[in-house]
Image (cartoon, rainbow, N blue to C red):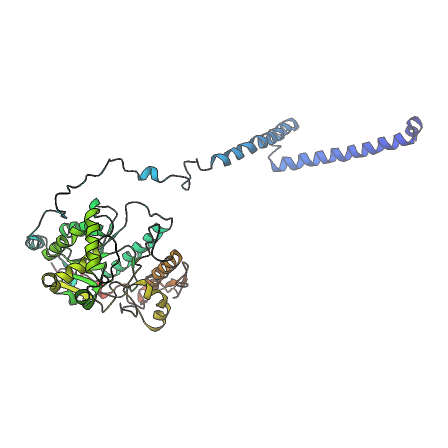
Length: 450
């Protein structure tokens, strides 16, 4: 009342309102300090002054950290040396060894020094090394499966993933059947690149491993789809070269697809070295391979015009020199040593419903070969999506036969995920896997009593 008389009623109300607002502001400030003390650690020094300094430093540090964080985000862009996506892989793929040595065009191509007494050399070695027998059991030869890929990464981003699936598939089959594996990523002879790169490698392995009775070559785009099928080794007792094919198509029709060289068996003999010597001359890249391709196209039924390839060359050799080579060549078609994927992959579900592993033929193919898909290249002969989807299905089709040993299977042929198909037990050694692949009889190795 006294204040109203001195300064007037209107000004008195304004002052009272300002005081009320001031009280609210002070109260809010106190609450803010209390909250900050609990959330950012203020109060640890025990004095209001130090609390204030701590709060001030906290806000200043946040302001300084904000632009620093933005700067870090800018710096972790492509120039970051830890960023795999930004790294130029070509930096480490360059060869610094200069140009390759060019062969003398006036000298005929050979795979190596001529060897004429390999059977004698090998027999002597086997006698001197009885613990490295070329047979690991009755009618069970020592086998080396050979496959490989380019020393460089694939030309597309998913190719290497499918190469990994392919070699995993081969390792599984070979482990189950007691077969050794050799995976090659080296081009041993630059002249024999492409289709022909296998020949120098095969010759080198035959000569380096006299203990191996059969070398089994298999392309990287082929997969095992019957893990239970054991090859009928007894059938090949008198044969040195086993390929998937048909006599009529090779010898009578001279059809360029009468056999397939993507999966074959070659016995370690002098005969095989001679066959490699006869096979190789069409292989050197450049003019020789181009001219040989013209000869093959004119001589073989249905062959398109392109450079000489190892398969056409083999058909040509057998068709024109049957008397020399035919007796030791076995063209197998009772089961799928090579199975063309286009006629198999859409029938997997039917096979599962009607048949079982261990047949190896059209009912359950031993091998599904993705000829023409070229998963490691830029372009294939078939739609990429179809090839990759079917390669996944083929892998899972074979992988299911491995997983079932341990009580699992893929949820579907198109799925990477698995499901349990057998309950766990406290007596695991009494569990029998359906296909008998865990400890198969054909894998057993005879142990010497000495």
